[in-house]
Length: 255
Image (cartoon, rainbow, N blue to C red; front, side):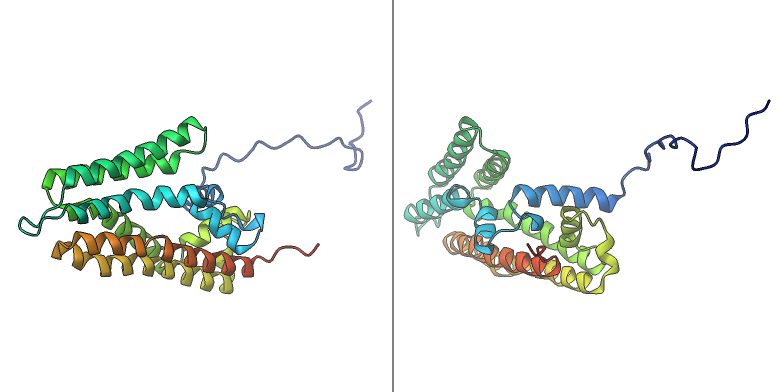
């Protein structure tokens, strides 16, 4: 006798479907990369925490501040002290040597203490590359060229992402909040992420607008001083504004 067909209720569980083999989109890849970078910097909105603590972590604490400031500060001080008005040159070898040496010491300390060394290694490579360019040309102001390139690249990326509707801030936050790109269908989020990206683009453009004239004028002391002033002192408040804006869009669940 032929078995009667089973009803859906009596049928066993359906076999599991094979996972989708669709490759991730470009926006998903960019969002994942930016989100991972933000998480490592302590800027995960889902983690919560006071704004001041978040900004402090983003700057890397005392160690991060020293690693960011001291090499440039040492270069500016030594170049200024050894500057000869007649030749209009400072001692580049001494100034750049100690600057790169400090960056190398910070990197070595991180490696020996098994601390995350990615940022320190990147800073060492950038510092050494900038020093090599300055020594090659014999001009102290060329020590800042790589910084100009970095500011121009970041500023352009933030500006373009905002103008085409794919804010880099939105991509990073969407990944961190497990939202993907769904934020683009929310007008409020799109507007906030647009202006945040514009603000970051404005920061990088402002640095270039102020510092480039000093570069072409060859004023190394003023250029180095303004680079320090326009570094963390401008970075920290914008991190705080970004954090507060994102937390307003994604309030923590009530306990």
